[in-house]
Image (tube, rainbow over all chains, first blue to last red; front, side, top):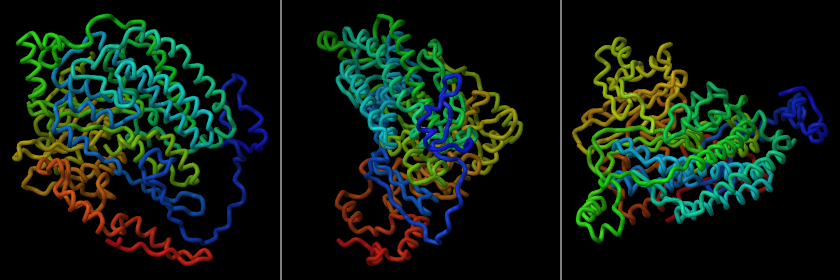
Amino acid sequence: MGEKRVLEFALATPGIDAAGDATRVPLVAATPGPPEPDMHTDHMLINIGPQHPATHGVLRLVVELDGEVVVRVIPHIGYLHSGFEKLGEYRHYNQIIPLTDRTDYLSAPANNVAFALAAERLMGIEITPRCTVLRVIACELSRIISHLVWAGTTAIDIGAFTVFLWMFQERERVYNLIEEWTGARLTTTLTRVGGLMADVPDGWTGRLREWCERFPKTLDEVDRMLLRNGIWLGRTQDVGVMSAAEAIDYSLSGPMLRASGVAFDVRKDHPYLDYDSYEFEVPVGEHGDVYDRYLVRMEEMRQSVRILLQALDRLPDGPINAADPRVILPPKRRLMSDMESMIHHFKQVMEGVPAPVGEVYFPVENPKGELGTYLVSDGSAKPVRWRIRPPSFLNIAALPKMAEGHLLSDLIAINASVDIVMGEIDR
Amino acid sequence: MVSAPAAENPSVATLRARFGASVGRCAVLCGATIVHVAGDRGHDVLAWLRDAPDERYDYLVDVTAVEYRDRERPLEVVYQLRSLARNAQLRVKILLPKNEPLEVDSVVDLWNGANWLEREVYDMFGVRFRGHPDLRRILMWENYSEGYPLRKDFPLRGRFSRSEQVRRALGADLKAHYSAEELSIAESYHSLPADGGAAPPAPGPRER
């Protein structure tokens, strides 16, 4: 916290330094007043959720309060537990992909890609160049729609309603594009092991490019509303701070880790697809507070647009599916006329695609953080174990650490800043 | 696609030199190095991997367990480790034979991130983590009594029939939904002086 400032000053001054950057000005006087007299009251037990808009899903927080100060938070999860990992042990690899939609349902295409990549690494399948670039497009679109929901809902939790509307409007536009591609908006089931469910329709790349060129303006508008907004700064700065060492200790990942100053991004450090050939920056925060998480995610969206434009430039022609009849279904036309195709089709549908004995852990950089897919195979067509390393699960586990000692209203801001999705936490 | 180098992670050789026979066989699968460690030295090995200046596996990626369809095969507790500084990864496995109690030392004292991960492994596989500060179910509810869902002997639809599940849910003691820790807070709530009206009634068993 800086020196004492008066309320009017912080509100009237946009808080920019000589270089034009936002200064980190606390909204209210930083110097603490006389301590409040201890009323010797008992602590209060407050139950927030599981049905509460500010918990972003069916998260239940049992909060022990001393006045307005959070003494203890006990998160309760599991209300959305569906046993996806158990279900996966009874399904063929391609049949698991619809389940991945429903884990982090705000970024379904990226989950589809994550699972397909792990299964392909396990089976030793090479995907085509067009498929690689289309998957990068799917991942980056997912990052943007997920961060849009995050920005919108966090802003509305802190009281900025307009941002919510602007962000969801942009999200609808992306969903229109995704719907044109996959036929679904939320549960896309975009990938197949060895390829994609469909190629993009005619003219789609043009419409995506158009959107990519216009979208950063919305981000700029939101930044103009929030970046130097006195209320926003007061509600987010120095709230929910995680130092770099703490973030690593708690196994945080994604924007949560980077906002704390740890420059780890799976796309850069363990590149998959063809991420190592794109030009993009990894934004890293300094303070690890809610404000830095906001900055990091906003910048990540801009970088995603950069990647999208590069991907559109390089998108090669060619097939989207690997030329491997063991894993890729034959076209319907050949299936009806060609005996061999019919056998491949029959075997794939009835028996599934067997994976060799072995195991793989495949991390990808999902919008929420590092999504790991751990597959163990005993040589059959169904995995022995399908483990999702859920980034939200580990990020929300640090909520007590972040929120204890803050005000109850800060707990809402901190919880929003984690960017959880319960489908992934509970699985 | 960029595939990781298929060579064995050099940490395994140093581990063998340091811990000798406690370090079991090692495999390289899909570019990742997997090393088996004896259960009683698991915590020591992981602590050493985290702190040794040449290793510095400071980031715990994941803790999970694997049970094979072959009932005789031991259950595996799997630790995915990463060194952020060296950008290296290592997978450590501890085998738990089925005829012995499924117990392993907790690593929450090394990484706080292990807290919920170990709770999930306990919840789903029934592996007990010795020294865990708060080992209780996490995804399933506290008094869930059908067993451990991700074990291979657990049927896909659960052990109880739907009517039995409903009967138990209706007959549940609501207080049992709170952990002991929360109950202590809940009790102080009922000792609060009433705000003008009567004190809130204590939660009792729900009527059928």
